[in-house]
Image (cartoon, rainbow, N blue to C red; front, side):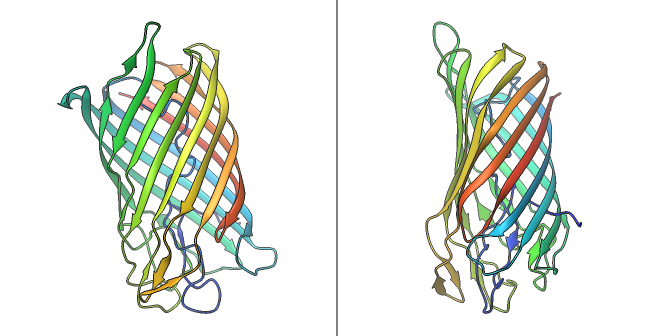
Length: 301
C-alpha cells in the first residue's frame, strides 16, 4: 500500500471526485488532532523548541460520495520550529514565531491519481500571555497565533490528491489551558479558517474557493504521576460555515466531522515531552470518516 498525507492540512481531495467540476473534500489540510494536552503554553517557558509529529490517518468511508469500498490512507511527518521570546510586546504578552512544514504520503482507492511530497509551509507569529496565577499555582494559560498557510507544497491539477493546496489560507487560533485543579486540566485550540482562490483546481474548473470554517482541538486530562504522566480524552471538530464557490457559483458541499479518543503526555524530562493521541471520527459530511493516530515529541533547546 502506498502511504498518504494529512495538518495539518487535510489535503485538497480535489474538486470533482464525482462527475462535474466540483464535488467535495475541497478544504485544505489543517490541524485536526495534532495538538492536544496543556496546549495553552510551551511546556518549558521561553526559548527554542523543535517538534516532530508523526500522524497516520486511515478511512474506509468517504461521506457524501457514491463509491463502493473506498479507502484513504495518509501518513504525515511534520517538522516544527517555535521560538518563544522573553520580550513583552504588551503587558504580560510575549511574542513568538512558529514555522511548520509537513511531508505527506498519500494513497486512495478509487482515486489512483494521487501524489506525495512536501506540503504547504505554515508560518505564525503569536503572543503568549503570562499565566494567570492562583494561590496553589497556575489557573489559566492563553496564546493567540495569526497562523498562515502558504501554497509552497507539491501540487498538480491533474491529480485528485495533492500534498499542497495551491492557495493561501489564513488560520488564526486561540489556545488555552484551564487548571480545574493542579491535577486536572482542560485545553482547547479554536481556529478560524479563511481560504483564498485555487486558480488550477482538479476537475476542469477555472477556479475554486473553499468555504470558510471553524475547527478546534479539545482535551480533558488528569495527572497519573505528577509532573511525569497525564492521561485523558482528546478530540477535534471541523465545521464549514460558508459555501464553496466554483467559477463564482456556490455549491452545497459543506464539510463537517467530529472525533474523540484517548491520549496522554509523558514528560520525559523538563525539556523533552512525548504526546500520544488516538481519534475515532463520527458524523462526517462531505469528507472522509476514519481513525487518526498521532505521536508528537517536543524538545526544548
